[in-house]
Every structure is written in structure tokens, then in C-alpha cells.
Length: 246
Image 1 (tube, one colour):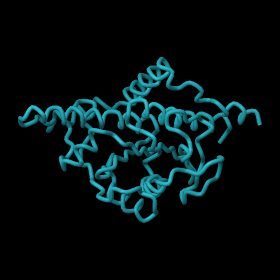
Image 2: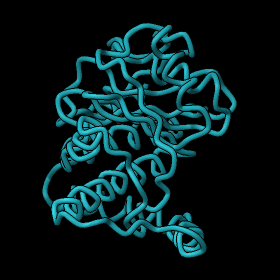
Image 3: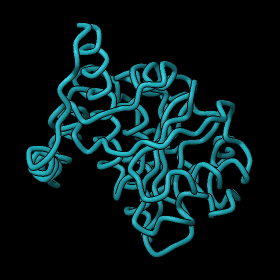
């Protein structure tokens, strides 16, 4: 892996963290990882770095046991979420642990998430992990990963969600629209009537047309440009230029 490639990977992870924090899917906690193709290593935002001001230089490299390979800080204490999923899912290259409001509220109320919104229609089976504390042991990470199975997302009751994707951009886009789907489901339920859920051929076609690679890129570009316009990505490359010159 060249230094230029490494910079690009780190920058993408850092951008995802800042953009998720900007739209209130992350807060002071939460993390984004990216598995380096063809290796047993991954990038993740460091434990010490603020999610609001994380830079590419704050992204550390670890192996699948969570051992620090590169960086000046340790990974988040819940790195086991990422390592245990990566060990089981060869199709997954990015894992995001969010703390979204509406998905968490539905979990507290024991209401299953349903596909109710076009671009959020990939919602299907959403397993529920009942241990609400930090997932800070290998045993808990393995339990969560086994329960996730081949699904896209899993809820952590009273805590948050974990979502997986084939890339950072895909996992980011799914994070955005999982929460939007949950918000629309919550709001519709407030009307006190039965909600209409996408199903049958309509659901299949909606899913097929809503998650093309071009749409994933469109979601990423929209949030990236909005974050840039609002100054939320200022200084995100700090420290990384010096690394390239070494």
C-alpha cells in the first residue's frame, strides 16, 4: 500500500466520522473502520480523537486482534465490534457504530424497524443485541457478530446500532438512511393509525433501484459538500501532509 493510498483511506474514514457527527448519528463516541483489502489490517478513528475534529492523522491501523500497528493512540475500546465482524464477513470492508436517536427509541419501545421509506427500504431483518453496555471484550464482539450474521445492521438495545458495508461510503449512506427510515416510521406511528410498509414486488423494485453505486456516491458527495460548505471538514488533512513527506 502506497503512502498516497494510505492517506486516501485515512481521509475517507476521518470524513465519515466528522460527517456522521455533524448529522447527529455520532456524538462524543462512535467509530468508523475500513479494512485494507487483501490484508488482516484495518483503519479506525483513535480513541482519544474528538469525533467533531478528528483528522486523517488521528486514524490508526490495527490488526484483527486489535493490536496497534500504526498511529500514536489506541483504538476505541469497542474495537471488538469491528474485528469480530471482519473475521466473519469477507464481504464487509467497513463497519460503523452509531448512536442514532430514532433507531434507539424504536428499540427502547421494542418496535421492529420496517421498510417504510424508498431509499431506506434495505431495512429487513434487524437483530437485537440485548447487552447495552460497551462492547469492550472479544466475547461480546463475537456474540454481536454472530447475531448480526449476514444482515446489514444490528441494534444494541438502549445503546445504538452497528452497520456494515462494502465500503466506507456504502456504510455511511446506509447509516444515513437507516435513521431516516426509522424517523419516518416513528412519525407515522404518532398518527395513531396502521402504518403502510413496503412489501412484495414494490419492495423488491424499490430496493433494486435505490441502492445503485451512483446513488451511494451521490449521498456521500451531498454530505461531503454540505459539510465543507459549513466548515465541518476544516483541518481534516492536518498532519497527513507531513507523513507523505517522510
